[in-house]
Length: 277
Image (tube, rainbow, N blue to C red; front, side):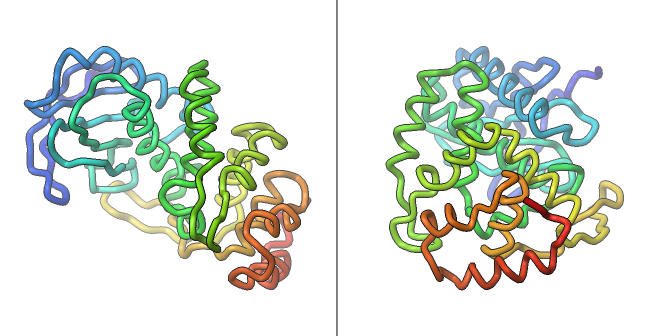
């Protein structure tokens, strides 16, 4: 396997720095700007590599390059964003670009690294680009499932317990006020329907049945989802992944009549009859 490039020149959003390769292995390559504490490189590589390896083993593969590329900033560019092998944003790399005040190992830094690579998983699964469910679950709800499962899978029980308590108590205002996404939807799916495998099946059903077209963004022709899904379609495809009708659970989680999802659900069963349960 060839070594990763020694530097990456950022050219996205407000980023314009030359970041340097600090460590790499067969699963990850980490790049730091000049202000990042090099003493944190070992744990960052270890955790990033194990995270990307778990995501590949569970949901992948994701293109032909086995590495995930993690770009780190300190004192600037706070938060983060992903790139994937379909997108020119990060030069077609499965990647994350993240910034914090301090890279001393912490649960929050674990969460930031794993969160951005989770977006790579959802946007480039089964060799199809896009995330039809992003408009349903937003930036962080599927991330809660993915992170909890990741920490369990990596044997990181302290982090698993931490995020479990955090996510179980979280409430959101979509699709209705006081929605408990993790407590009433994603954790029951994880607990009762095969842990990560329920989402593996969900992404697989999307790739098989949801509308796609061929596009080319500079990395060769590939399949891209043509639209987002509505809530009724989401419940239908998740029911197919779980192997059981989840409409009752959806009523508990999301409310009856919220966004007219029951009518959408019945239409989705007509539009996508190959999804069975």
